Image (cartoon, rainbow, N blue to C red; front, side):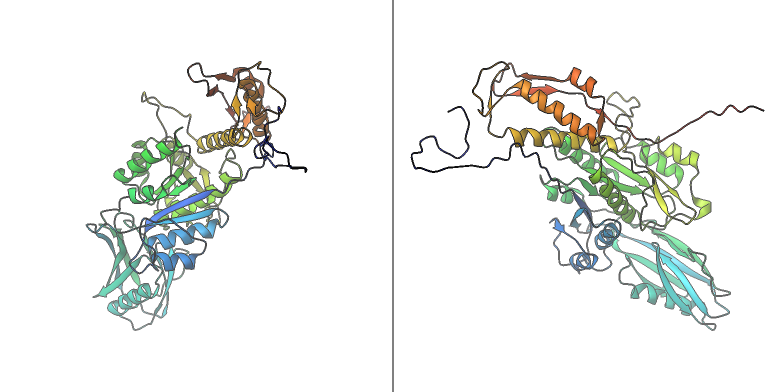
Length: 485
């Protein structure tokens, strides 16, 4: 009997017709992409630190991680931009040795007429009622009361002698720079009222992101939202993601971070990093905190990359991100410089909508320290990841329990035997399929260079070397117009 059966025995004498099912040729595949969001919780949350939990609703995140917590806000920001991608959250505790950031709002002069103050804390609008007879101390007390009434805010407030002290709920560096301002949308201020603001600062001691990385284990998370940009944590992220991308684990993941600072500070930060699995969005003076921008950016990118890893992300709306003031937005030339520093950029429309301009990785140099653009755009590692997955799926699905023979072996039809030449044909067929999907191009060159052979030292092993030509993205068009008069 030449045909290889999986379940029907050869020693069968009972009369009947026996038919078994085998899915090796079915070819159907389905991938559920997943995002891990790391962030700090509050003691009021019910979820223990370091244990991944799937989150599908902002109210669920609030209960799990505490109202006003960083992680609850990250989950809400992600779900606001993307409810299609499976999201898991990993809570971290504050560093017990850390300090909380502190900022202030000083009421410089009292109002002379009643009105409503439009106050913005980290980009969140708070309305403060002002009466004509309020003195500076009364106004400060009203501001503090409204801040404390907004339980979703990442800060609490106290007031004394016309000064509102704003303190972060969490310890650590992430809330440094949290924006405090009035009238973001040019709302009218009560006449006579003037305020001065000092953004939060002095926060120190981020949690150890290794807790989140360990919690991910060998589960395949395609993307990671990381709120930390301190060197110690980034080195751990880079190391872990490099290992996950490697051939022994093959569960690659891209991390999304965000950086707030001046143009010079942002460029310096980017220039000091070099990794193809971390992408950093510059925020400039956007009122939206960096830990929320990283979540928003990951949500928007993940939704598109899951559909097509080779399609560029440019022009996608960063839903929930507020733009810097008009006079503080970086020019085209300034953004271009950042794109040479490993920093991703965004543009702002006339209506204030923030859109991805170019999503790049932080990879900038090869092992020799020379400039290298091979992993410049996030589409490159994302597409490579998908190609590898499809190749692995094809082999594991079609040849799960096959015998291996050399090319030219005269085995019976229906035998569960595979040869290097058969695998070569399957790789070529798969390449055609991926070409139709728009992931690769230049089939003839791929076929010419594809090598599939039996290992000379291990008769149970097949080796191959292929050279997929990844489809590129239309990013720049240039023309030269020679006019005639």
